[in-house]
Length: 275
Image 1 (tube, one colour):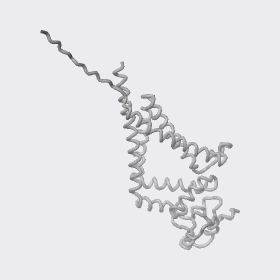
Image 2: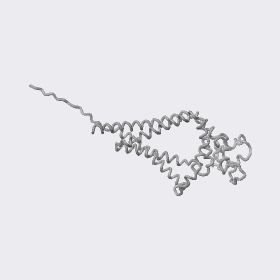
Image 3: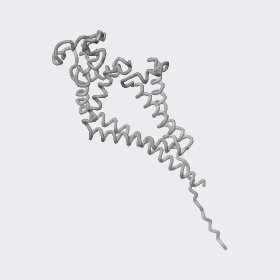
Image 4: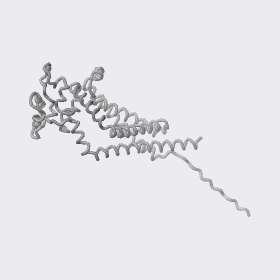
C-alpha cells in the first residue's frame, strides 16, 4: 500500500507593521499640531502689531523680530509633521524619505553648530555681542523685541551687552545734546534693581541714571553687569540642563529617523514581494 507524502509549504506574508505605522503617525501628529499652533501665534502677533495690514514694517525693522523665529520653527515643524503623518498613513515612501532626510540634516546642523561654537568660542562671543548691540539700537522699534530684551535683562540681572553705557547706541537713551527724549541718559526699567516689596513696576526708574556718576556708583539703582558676562556665568551653572535638553532633542530626532526608515523598509519589502 502506497502512502502519499504530504508536503507543507510555508509562505512568508510580508506586510507593513501596524505598530511602526501608527507610532510614526502618533509621533508626528504632535509636531503637526505644535507647528500649526506656532504659525497661528506668529500671525496673531503680527496682526496685533499691524504688520499684516502693512507688510513693509517687516523690512523697516533694523533688529530681530522674535515673531520670525516663531514662524520659521512653526513652518518647519508643520511641514515635517505633515510629511510624517501622511507618509505613515498613506505608506508613501517619498514623504517618509523627505521626513527622515530633513530630520537627519537638522541633526547634522545641530552637531556642526555645537562643535563650531566650542572651537570658535571667541568669534561666537563677539557675534552674540554684536547681535545684542544691534537689537539695543532697535529696542523701541518692535514691542516683541522690546519684551524679549527686557525679559533677558530682568532674568539675568544685567544691563546692556557689556555695560549699561551700551544704551548710548539707542536714539532714545543716548546722552548726546541733540537728544530731546525724556529717557536721555537713562536705561530701560528692566535694568533697575527692583524691590521685592513693590507691587507696581516703576517703568521710569531708569530715567537719568547715567547722567552723572560712574558705573560703580550706579550699582545701587541698576544692574551694572553686562548680559554677555551674565550669559558666560549662567552657562557653566546650567551645563547639565543644557546638555540634557540637547540629548533629549537628539533622541527624539533619532527615534523619528528610526521609525521612518523602519517603515520605509517594510513598505519596500511588501512592494518587492508583490511584484
